[in-house]
Image 1 (cartoon, rainbow over the protein chains, first blue to last red):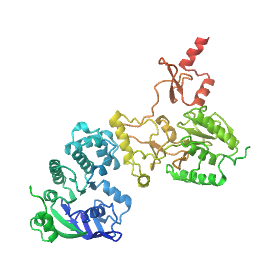
Image 2: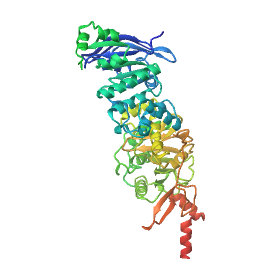
Image 3: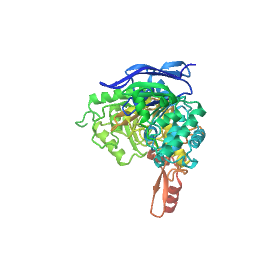
Length: 256
Length: 290
């Protein structure tokens, strides 16, 4: 089987300061990869490099495109990359405000990606938007409300609906549950887990919350100071951490 | 003649503007940046249109200015006077007699011909501006033809009002490529943009952009399959000339609910009246007088 994403030697410096160095992994279809590490460990930089938002200094990101098989997204032309990012890719931001258009209704937010790939039938766009709002548990009668009138949890669910409506194959998530209270987090995780299984999505989830990766991720990479210090199956890494930093990370989780 | 250089602007400036116009004509609908000059009138009064007119005028031209369809409003009168004085060109109020027509918010009702140029005054040339405030981003969207956002605006219209409520500055697609703001003309005028024999030039002074439609350009108003574009106007006939096919202004005539609908294109209305057409209220008034 061809990996959906092959990452080789991604390195990014911000001037003299290191963002991340020599990161590589394979991601297979249907697999969920977690990236954990403390603030400043380079996980968001890495995600940005993978999603084509930051240009790394070295390395390659081979994505298995529908038409031509594996292609390096970093050397692709910008129109191709932007086309990928609104069809086969999705990006869920930590702050829903970054990923939503706050001045546009919920239905319009979900419909935007459909219209961006050429949908021109109002009834069908609205139908799909309503369907997706239902899937992320946003009531029907809120379809014409703006996201500013939504709670934080609802905004985050709306962002997920907006991203998944075009049926992407790879979802990048940057702290999808950050800033939400625990009960809302739990429901969001439940929802994400359901969608990932149901749609057979591959996902890369960046988080500092070990509970999130325990629930969602098949595999785990632990980053510290821009380097990957440990990787493996999630349960294996969390239950039997080898690297000193991972041991610290696992033992730092507060037990209620 | 006066002591002004012909048509107020100096020759180098006119040359720079002509280059922008030529580039605009070569790439229909593309917004060409140009070094807009200070004009002796405030922004919003047609500084873009005036500069384009100045660069296209020749001493043999006959010049007409319309503002919301009318030849006799402040803006139209002052710009017409401006070029009468600085260029010494002949002026006219007759659409068919003019060779250059500067317009604000309307396209004349009478058909244009191949030897005419229509110059629009444009306040905000970027159709995506209210959806995406960053110029760097909108430029990228134009160059990559990412126009999904434009339909989001129309979607919002339908979801809020049940129909596309955008009534003016209705976005169009030019030659299947660039999405363009046709300036704040009513959408009733949109079909006249397409396949027009005259050259159409758009000048935005404050925003420093010029764009253009060469003659017989394909211009399509954006819409949805199940909510097609509709060129709307008041459902009435002109009370002065009886025209059913022209764009109408509603005029309040007293404080007891009296009102009348009149052609916004004053030249069109006058021409029709001269030919003996008469509208309901004018007829009633004449009867009352007689």
